[in-house]
Structure formats: C-alpha cells, structure tokens
Length: 318
Image (cartoon, rainbow, N blue to C red; front, side, top):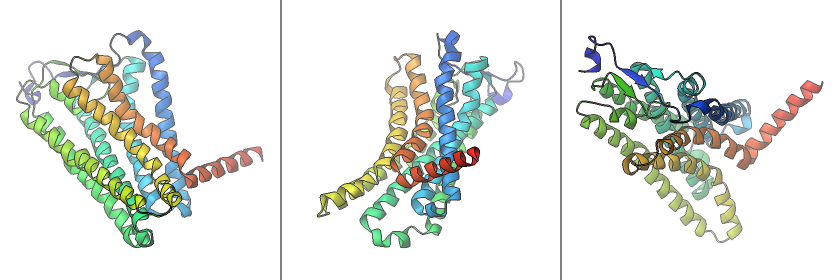
C-alpha cells in the first residue's frame, strides 16, 4: 500500500532516532552538539559579514568563500531543528513531507558545497599557474556564472529524489537510523521496488561529488606540477601555503562523506552508534571547521575579524 493510498490506516509514521541506549543522557550529549552548531552558525555568519562589508575582500577567492559559508549555513539550519527536537524534547515523529524537504536541503547544500570546493581549487590553480591572467580569467561575471551554475546543478540533481521517494511504499511505523533524514536511510525502509531510487542515488553521487573529487585531484596534480617547476623552493612553498585552508576544507567535507558511504555499504554489522557518529560528522564537521580554518589560516580574514572586534570593544568602552 503506497503512502498516497494509506487512508484506511492513516499515513505512515516516521520516527527519528537519537543515540540508542543513551536516551537518558541526550541532554548532556546535546551540549557539545549545540556548541558545534553555535560555532558553525556564528563563524559562517561572521565570514559572510566580513566579506560583505569589506571592499578589499571583493575578489574571486573571497566570493567563493562567501558561497561556501552560505552552503554551510544552509546545511546547519536544515539539520538543527530535528536534531534538537530529538535530543532536547524526545520528539521523534516527523511528517513524511518534512522529511523529504529536509533531505532535499541537505543534499542540495552538500552538492553545492562540493561544487564550490571544486571552483576554489580552480581559483588556486589559476592563481598559481597563471597569476598575471588571474583577473582576466576569473572575472566577476565568471564567478557569478560558476555560482549560478552550481546552484542549478544541485537543484536539478536533487529534485527527482523526493519525487521518486514519494511514490514508494512504506510500512505503518518507520524508524529512521538518525535524527535527520538521509536518502540511504529512507531507502532501507521502502517496501516496494527500490531499484529506481537506488540507481538515482548512485547517479547523483557519481555525477556530483564523484566527478568533483576527480577534478579536485587533477587540479592539485597540476598545482603540484607547477610548483615543482618553480626554481625557488621558497616561492613554491609560498604558493602551496595559499592552498592549506582549501585542502583542510576539502578533507573536512570528503572524509566524513566517504566514511558515511563506506559504512552504509560495507559496515552493516557495525554498531548503530558508529553510523550516527559518522552521519553527524558528515553534517557538522564542514560547517564547523571551514570558518575556523579560514579565520586561522587566511591572514586577510583574520586581520579583518580582529579589527572589527577591536572596534566593537572600543565602542563599548566609550
């Protein structure tokens, strides 16, 4: 019996899951998670404010960082309500429509972030390989086209997902594995033929993060080739140092995502807590780490933040 024809017994119920066996400790578990959300939201908000208000940061590198912060905020706000409702109020039930909306936003923001990380790798490649042509290649118009193209790609890839999932059959009670809705998790609960949705998920993964990761590796191989061809080792190290923040952002995004994908396919005997921790890392680590890394490693961002803070302290004292 499909979801749309469930009128005899009412619509199926979907239940989120916190940390199985640790329900009594959910409040204490929520404290570090809430701190991570606060740091992620505050940090990305500061990045957006600094880049928006400082004219000297209106360049392609910081425009891409602005987009990255936006996608991180979108990911945080998409997962925060259901996470806290489970941990704070033990409110586990979620409507199927709300679950599909959350799933759509999570994957749209993730695909967008993957595309932005690739664009930032291209930015570093052009800056290191052809510094004199940097401004002519990465014009404001080009940056806008890359941003709009990434947004259109994420929307086009993600939209079929909830449509296909809404046509599937579910049982009366459906217990999800996490406190958020993820496509593989919903797929496990389907009672009808799931092949179309499964193939769709694989196509989305390969055509987004799969392609992006390959192009990222190629970009850094070209960067290394250029750096190794530089006569001065100091110049080469200086050029590579501009990529440190971006490499940290790439690792914080792809490592948890790869871990989540691997444990879903090969770790079926693993503890449910392991699944939950890796899923939370996939959702929390990139929004948390990106503002911290870019604030610490990017001198221009760090200097502007300190100046804004000093001005704010001076106004309070006055």
